[in-house]
Image (tube, rainbow over all chains, first blue to last red; front, side):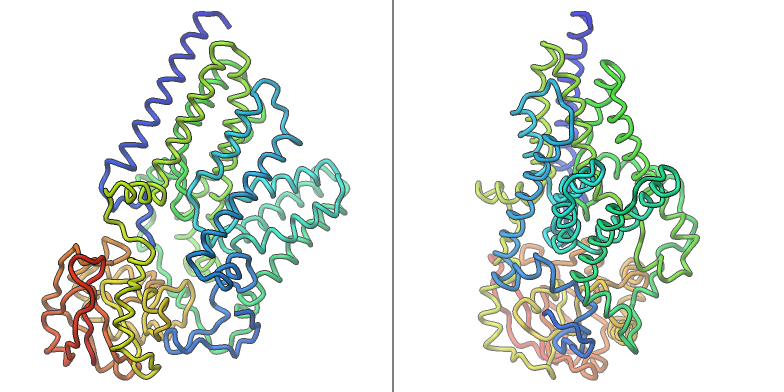
Length: 42
Length: 505
């Protein structure tokens, strides 16, 4: 793997981490309390 | 708790619920709760199941996975990630124990000492849920045995012996349920009237189910968010190196998710077959978290080959931990509560422990004066040993459901959502109110909600006939006099989680 390609994948991995964290934060913390995914089923 | 007899009837529940329709008394979690009470039983259960998950995952990786580049810390961290997922404690190691089962299958595959393998297969059912993993494992095991016999033409002795171990363990662990299912006379389960679909399931729902199941599994299994692992897999597999194992496992995940997404079509086509309707054979999702973690490990091992990329491994692992942490509402509520930013009830608050100390002075535990709950779960009264007419049960008598329906018929007629919930499903045999609705499936109205019911229409004569004596309501019933109820008193204040109104029939 060339240095340039490795740098590109490095950036893509970091981007994936950030995007997944943001998406999870939005879905599970920001969205309304009664979101089914939040386990409101006792 | 351990009786096999179909004569054992729990008189406190639904005017006599057969013991054998309830979950088994031979599982580890049932005995932990019996010995240490529910609260500590669940804590010990969680600790035990997660320990089994961690150790068996580590053993499985070390013995049967070839990982050449990822270091020991990375492997241990991935094993710890498995223990960070949220799962329902009563389902035991149905999810946490997948590495243990995989370990057992690997031992079989490599023809290693059979006694330990047989032990793994025998004890697994005692630690897990028959409904949520037992049936599905048996189905998959059978398919694999047929594959070995017909296609591979392998030596089958040890495989069949392992299969027998698993079946034997399952039968003993769930003997009450199985015996009840086969032998209970004059008992028709309410599940035979399940109506899942009126119309053919539509494609939009199917696509949504696919995406939801693929990226966050199912709340019954665990909340497992797979977006990051999916991204890392795509980058490492298509960008760096194609690993055939990762591809096979990924296809297995896609197949399980497709089966889940399209299962409504099968259910719709087989609605008249009670057996299929009652069991619901779409519960293979319990395999997903483990399969995703295997893909993560393979992908990380691919990434670890390169100096710069290997530096992303700690970042990926910490990110995945944070994702699991945020998706785990149990831990989130705990931490929020610790910093005073959460109004979710604690165990004692939810079970109204303080309020029931007072209630016990007012309402006798009399089987001729049973309780009904409105706006709070009947499990709360049941937790305090009160006989109740209502309840949440996965199996109960259909005739009882019909009788109970007479109480709430007028309310159901006013609100199509609660009518649908009760008539087509009905596991929650609750005193539904059209004004409270069903959007919040718990139907719980805490003191903070300050809701009132203006016009409740329930048949109190039927309640009397069914030996009901009191209604415990989380909301004020303004027309209680029209219903010929007597208001006794309130327990708790608006500052507590529950403010309960007691009405006598």
